[in-house]
Length: 114
Length: 113
Image (cartoon, rainbow over all chains, first blue to last red; front, side, top):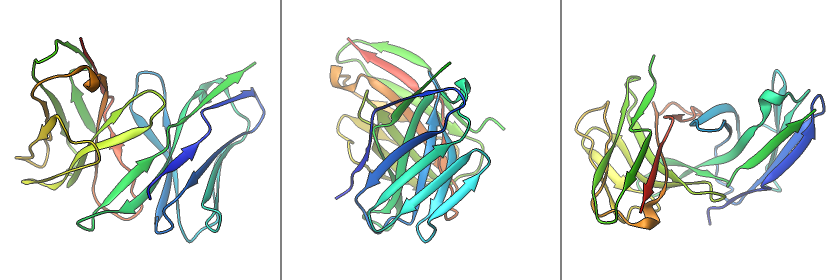
């Protein structure tokens, strides 16, 4: 089946680290993505990880992938108020016709407070 | 670069009315997608296209139609609007390179009353 699950809310203090977790079900996923959505805007690609990697770091962002448990996490170091947004996890899977599509989680709303 | 452009940004429709949501991209991407976003539900794929002249249904196609006469444009048509179609609609595109994520438009917020 195709399902991506995330917790809906996370609240952190400015300067702390944020960790957003995601679980997915399709073991054939080749790429997994993190998108950020600010109020009234579309989704912006933050980072992605190939399924044969277990970690990827990009400035303040660290992505960890546990393929055995089908668990993906996004860590934001030194969280700032500008990081307040909804974060979506997505997995890329093949469907009928051999084409890829993205399956999205429901999104985690990150609130950063002083 | 404009990226993916959607119009209109907001629209209120009466039940039974029809409208077309416009989407255009200037990146020469082959793949284009329409998603709807409902609160707390993530994004659901309505229709997709892998190139001009080729379209296919996604997970939630009922009540919608699409066309892809050019690489740039991928309009979404609602023929008989229903309250269940109240949502935010996102168009996205990608070139097809491995690992490349989608580029999203800023969305159209549609309310059917």
